[in-house]
Figure 1: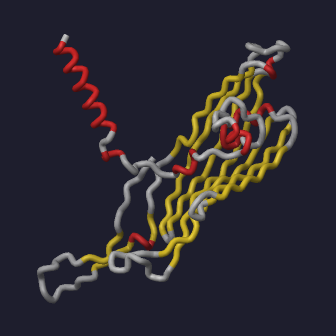
Figure 2 (figure 1 turned 60 degrees about the vertical axis):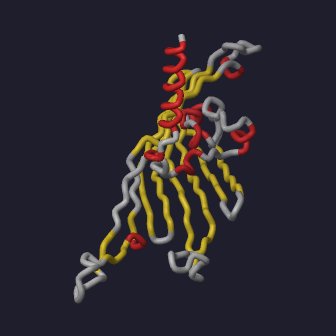
Figure 3 (figure 1 turned 30 degrees about the horizontal axis):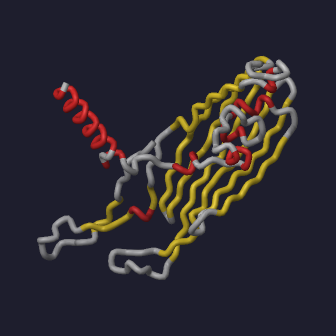
Length: 238
């Protein structure tokens, strides 16, 4: 019994060490896509994938657009701390016997920040901006009164001063309305099931003139040209 207890403790310790490994730290990008948008979604703790049936479905689950009965437009703006702000705007058009199409725009503005260097860590007096945004084009349609599907194609961009990264991504969603737990026995008042595969797409790699630098290829050799221009390469993150 003591041997099994020791082995169990060792497994737990190795798991804890594994989860704290810094290898995967900072290896994802476009984290703003997981913030969450819309007052109704915020009211339920962002558990909105199976509930969204309005224009905010462009973000939460494009299949929810198929259950809309009229055209909608939405604009939201949310100021955060340290001059950070988020925003969402979207519009959806219901086309009878065709489906619902929508276009959405989400983004984050990180505000204005002062440039610092190794030699001037308190600031150089120059300022820069950073921000992220994504533009989505969505289509959804009902295949039955209780079942709808939807898809979104989005363009994602992140910028930091003169450096930027771009990507294309895809969202795929389904929504099912059932009469289970419905007091009236109708699907609209019953259990809803929603599933969404979001932000499946290409990787992002930053590039720009801010990655341009100079290097001395032979620092110990006198008389050589010490300002060889180079571009620093960045990895592509998911």
